[in-house]
Length: 161
Image: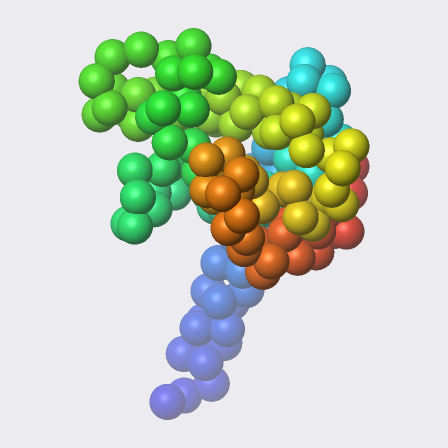
């Protein structure tokens, strides 16, 4: 390989890396704006919402869980989308609507606020936030997922606006 090809490849790699950084910054801007908005509307710490978003989807608005019918930024299930996001229609319709960040954050943060009110007075955050992942029925039956709570807390520490 000659020096000209190496330089061209090197410049291409730098350009792709720069585009990735720019795309990440742009995505972070809209995501941060929505997190702050829904945090205010539901009286939640934006760092908590960020922690759940990053744990559930790594910030990917089109994330879909292959193990259950949850989707979007906060990994929302159709039942939660209907109950807390005001969505209607078939499960497929609701799952599709949950891929829109506004719908997903509305449903997810409304549910998270409900759980915080129900559990936070008696349990530490790393414990009660597990109810978001497990659901109230399993959580009330005594099931726990400590790695989930720890991961949310870790991402909370990375929140910066």
